[in-house]
Image (cartoon, rainbow, N blue to C red; front, side, top):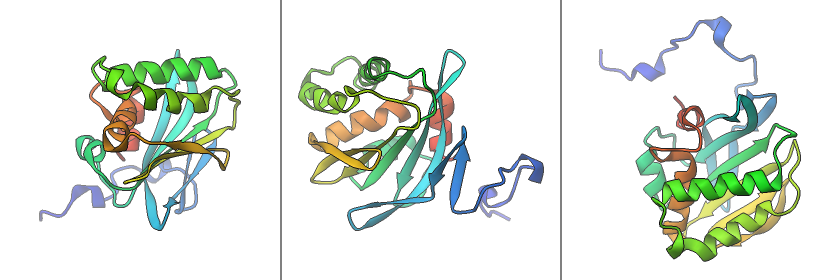
Amino acid sequence: DHRDLHSFPTRRSSDLLAVPAQALSIAGVTLPDSMEADDTKLLLNGAGIRTKFMMDIYAGGLYLEAKSSNAAEIIAADKPMAIKLHMVSGMITSEKMTDATKEGFENTTGGNTAPLQEYIDGFLAVFKEPIAEGDVFDIMYLPGKGLNINKNGQFKGTVEGGLPFKQAVWGIWLVDKPADKKLKKGMLGN
C-alpha cells in the first residue's frame, strides 16, 4: 500500500486541538482556513509561532492555492500567496519588528540587499507605525502587481519589486536559515 502516509492520523485524539475544522487556533489566536487574493482562494497551508527569548511574538500562517511542504518551490513560485502575522505579544515594538525583518532580509539575500533596497525600505515602512498585541498583518503576493500589505484589515500599500522581491520576503520564513525553524516547519504543514 503506497498511499500517502500524511492521509492517516498519526496523533492521539488527545493531542488534537479542539477547534472548528475551518480554522486553526495557535497561541490563543485563530487563523482562518482561507483568504482571498483578488479572485484566487488561498488555503491555510500551515502555521506556527515566532518565538524569541522564550517568548511567543506572533502566530504566522502561510496561505497557498494548493498545499505544499516544499519550501524552495513555494519561494520560487510566481503564484498568488499570502502570509498572515498575528501579534500575540505586548513586547513587540515597531523597532524590534523592523530590526528582525532587516535581519531576515540579510539571511534570505545572503547579505546582498542592495538590489532590493528600495523595495525593502517600502516594506519596512509598514512597521514604522506603532505595533500592538492583537495587530494582524496580511502580506499578499499578486503576480504582476507586487506585495499588498494590510494591517488590521486596512490597506497599507503595495510594494513592487516583482518575483525577486517576493522571493526575498517569503525567504525570511522559509529559507534554510529562517527567522524561526519551528515556525517554518509549521508553515509548511509539518
